[in-house]
Every structure is written in structure tokens, then in C-alpha cells.
Length: 190
Length: 233
Image (cartoon, rainbow over all chains, first blue to last red; front, side, top):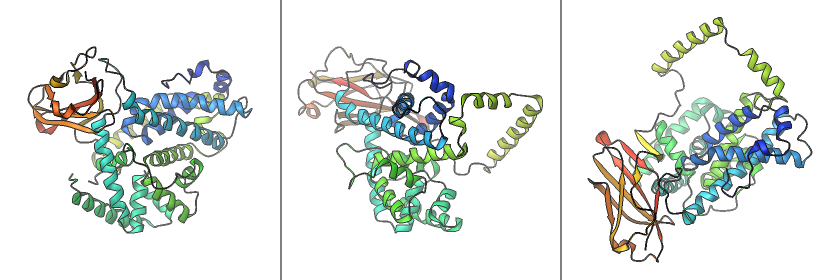
């Protein structure tokens, strides 16, 4: 849950019961948790449940503001609302993570895990190196590798870019080879 | 660097912000990122968003979330009542329909056996990331700080102590609270490390230091502690 207590537990939110009557909230929670877990980096892992919980409340709030909390709605519309709510909550969690190291209390012995600065520092440096390598890459390869690093599969690349499978695999193979060589030149070995 | 587990590492790296770094140019709106990730923008515009997202950890995460949600939405159908948002009575009907029956159990058991064989042969999920090489990431619980949190560390004798599993050696990484590295040590044989006083000399009274320990055992298996924070006198 948000550290500032801005989000009450969902079951106490006004209109929550009606929301549960109309929609499979547990299914939604599971879906969102899966999405957040797969999309977020490990340094946000401790906050995934909180992000989803807060996003659920925001979804309900958004529907209530629009007078839409008491009727079933098209799935595509609800996914859109869920997207807005969830990305907002991820950003809140990210901001807390970024400023958190300034605000950290001295350790109590058994507090919950949080982002590790050593790991984050090394990961951020690797990210910078990857960006530099991508920037120097032949454009089609950069787009192919970039979309792959953003999570797209070969099939999705084919559909999105209008490439055939051979083209996609070729661009990825060559692009990742370029990336590997570039990172090696920067001192990153496997 | 580009095996499946390495791809995961690269994805993680692109989503990790560097303190103080800012992306080049303003971020696209959320709706634009979502549309781009869903393949709903024209190629030129989409590729411009890709270029930005790859340089911006915040937008990288947004893109990946939009993609995951699009898959979820697509996977459950794009009709007016997709599964995740289906009305509760329809959800209950679907749950009833999925109740276990002997025939269903037999079919699923056969399918599971086949899947195990297929996985063993590497047929299924060829792109599925492999687990990383024995590295325990953030949140490892096996290592505990033994520094007394109720008393500030004397900067002329700031000794970090901890306890953890049996390992060959320890590595320690110490930063200021804004993640500036100030000291590190590798191959320690005892679970303790005295931060060099000169590394702390420039820090103000009451400054916090952030430290992390990695236990290295045989076969180079690593156990990483969570982050510890201590206050200097």
C-alpha cells in the first residue's frame, strides 16, 4: 500500500461491493498482477502488490467520477481505465524508489526488501551502455532489437513491422550480434 | 550477452534509472505509448516512440506494461466482456464449467506428460528466459546486518558486520544515500568490513551510508543481501 496511506484498502472503498458484483475483481487483480510483475524491473518487485491494489482503487474512483461504476462496461474500455490507473501507480512507486534512498530510515533489522543500490547502479550503467550501442546500430536492426528488448516476440515483430519471419530473425540475429560485440568493447563480458 | 537470461538482464537495465539522468526530449503521452506498443500507430511515429522509450526507463516500463496488458486483453478476447472483466455471474458460470471430472483429469494428465517431454526436448517455449546463473537478486533474506541501528557508526572506525550462509568469501559495496560509490571490498574472508575513514571524510555529520553484501560460494554462486542503511556520527 502506498506509504502515505492515500489509498484505503479496496474493500473499504465506497462502491467497492457493487464493483465486485459487476466485475470479476479477483480475476482482474490477478491479470494486473501478472502484467505488473512481467513489466516492472526487479527493483520494483517489493511494490507489485501495492501497485495493483492501489490501481484497483483508482479504477473504481475513475469509474465513479464518470458515473460508470454501477453498470457493466466494455472490456476494451475497462482495460484502458486499468492502463491509466496502473501506469500512474507504477510512476508513484518509481518516484518513491528514486527519492527513497534520500529518505531511508536507519535499518530496523527485518524491514521489507527494497531496491539494492549496488545492483541498481550496475544495472543503470549497463542500460547506458546498451543505449549507446543501440544508437550506433543500423536502423532496421536497432528497431528490431529495440522492440525485442521492449518485450516483443518474433511474431509480434512480424505483425507490427510487416516483416516476414526470415527478415525478423535475420535482423535480430545480426542486431544482437552487433550489440554483443559493442558491449564487449565497453568491457561487458558474459 | 544475448542468451535468454541475458536478454532479461538487458531489459532490466533499460528499465533502471540512473540518478540525475534525464531522457532526451519530452516523454510521449501515455496514450501514445500505449497505442505504439499495441501497434496502433503508423510506422514512422511508432519508431520515434521506440527510440524515445529505449532511452527513457520510465517509458520503457510504460511500453512493457502496455504490451503485457494488450496481450492479456487479446488473450481473453476483445469482446465486450473479456474474461478479466467479465461480469461476476459469467465468471461463476465459467468456474463451474471448469470443475474437475475424471475424463478431464485424464486428458490433462496426458497433456502434462507430453508437455514435460516436449520441454525436455526444448520444443516448447524456445524463447522462454532461462533462470539466471544462480544469482539471488534483491531481497535475499539469508544475510542480516549486525550493525546496531540504535547507535551511529564512528566514522574513524565504521565497521560493518553481518551474518549469513557459509560462503567462500564476501564482497561489500558501500555508497552514499545518493548512490555515489565510496568504498568496496572483494574476497573478504570474515563477515565484517571497516569502511576506510578517508572514504567517509567528506560526508556530513549524521550522513547515511548504504551498503550491500554479496556472499560468494563455491562454483561462484552468489547470495546478495538486501540494502542496509547506517548513520554516521
